[in-house]
Length: 265
Length: 317
Image: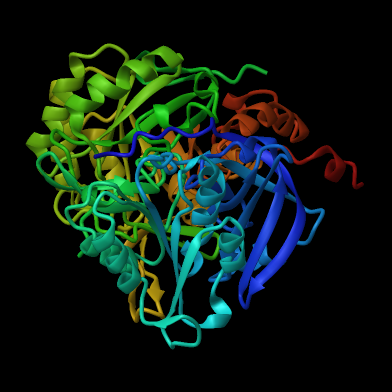
């Protein structure tokens, strides 16, 4: 299975930051007024100019068509995100998007589980917000973090009516351990279930292994990226090709891939 | 102002701004962001006879005013290029330069021969300077004898305008330039990326999957200008200059150093529209320097040319 989802048409846009919030230490969420970006599909990303040589790809945490706003939630990891974190309300950002292939709408006839780790959680909130109203029952959400203070967006998922399970590496909140435990448990009970996951690459590898044989498992990936439009071939991941392993582009073939497409080393 | 550039074998560009190979994909990728037909030309990403897989990720790393990359010339081969990408480029109306790569002299020849059969290829750029490939790639651009051999071999099978892309990672770029001129190159493009390394301290190892990479962006501009300036004095064929160009003023620097046209690359990742902005700004920037054409600008800074001082300094006495 290959992701055929096509998102909104990408444009160069300028968008004003209308709200800024720090949901956890070292994490910032910016609400941007941009009707173009607000039409994105959950799982797509925006390429943000930050003053360095390259833009920074960041996926959407919230998409509000009626207000014309899109939010991005990111962790401060280097110069680009440090600059972006310093941006205050009223500042206009130089943006390119929405880019990439997002998540497909989940099939309402089957149970749905969202699995997020750390700063991989935000795009799952956009997905849950967009599609929970159309489902027969609310999704199960498994959220993982290193520690309680770094757990993102738990209240937002609960507000949607989702059944939220939390895991932390140090046991400071929820189950001690990783998201794989609760996911494996859920999969055993829901053999036709569909899984959407986003998080660090080792976590996604573990999700892929735990859900092997299952066909509706979708992973949103992160990779160091150049152009964002498929031209430079920088942001590749190893995938199954027709004649053996091939490198595929996270920016345009993904960032959302079917788990069975990918090869985790 | 007329921005046309007349190059050998009838290659005529509507302006001197060319999208640099490796930064503009195989053509269609930037279509929704750039008016491709407005560019002087597009040099597509390196094309080999068979598909090449490329290097393991991470493939890019930011450095101060630079970008280090180790893509490894991933491409889907000349057959797919001809069927999938070339028809699109042909329809844009821009000039199409196909950057060709190979592991052996014979592989370079095979790509060039295959492209003879296609309409819409306006020129070849023989890439003997990619630092991210172990065999072939840069090794052909390191030794004058090898550079001569590969260029002569390609010359034998094509009548297309042919430029040869030089490596900055040699002691004497002028010697390589003279070798490829003698082998029948119509033009020289310079420079390819400068070999470098970055360390990811968190992982305690080289940052790039390919270990070393090629540096581009404003950090390499002085290196590029120095090589264009030297090569312009060593050969009689036209030079296409590149390396860290971000603005129309940067273009003028390359023209004055001896380039007849330029390629723009790394800045496109951040600002896809920058090439068009440069094309629009170039006439006014030239006029502000009391220059009325491209051709009178080319080589102005080379030794032996008497530069006209700006009027304000003239009026000092």
